[in-house]
Image (tube, rainbow, N blue to C red; front, side):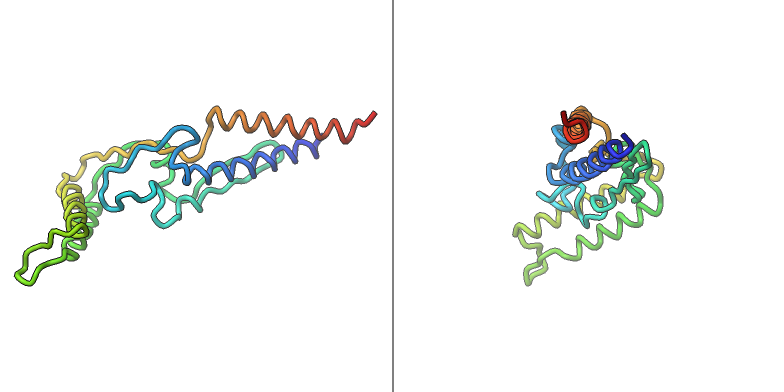
Length: 178
């Protein structure tokens, strides 16, 4: 029976690891779509995927009786569960640096005016976004929407039940031949 239980845990661990990774492709937690980004910094880009660090950080460990999924990046919890973060002086300096970085990239005509091309318009929106954040008062809160990528759901429960059933059927077929 221990062998069957180990196989069940191994199969669950593999299946759920794949499914939690696929949530980044789906841009949602199974059938629950993630809220779209308000930031113009990466228009049309994937949500929660910039460098891929968060996606690659999902790990699991198992014991004889359980499996634990976790991420070791500090911002994983706020993205998975949502919540609020408080603006600090350090954050404001970062926002100003991003603002100055965005404004230095404007395309300009020979007379010094900004061009009206798509890239410059996008950079203008990005610069305004960073300026808005930089002008926030220290202590103000920013709400991060919940964008779950791992955890419990009815889909997870269904997968676990199917894996248990398959493994038990296999065990009974192979070990109890009549």
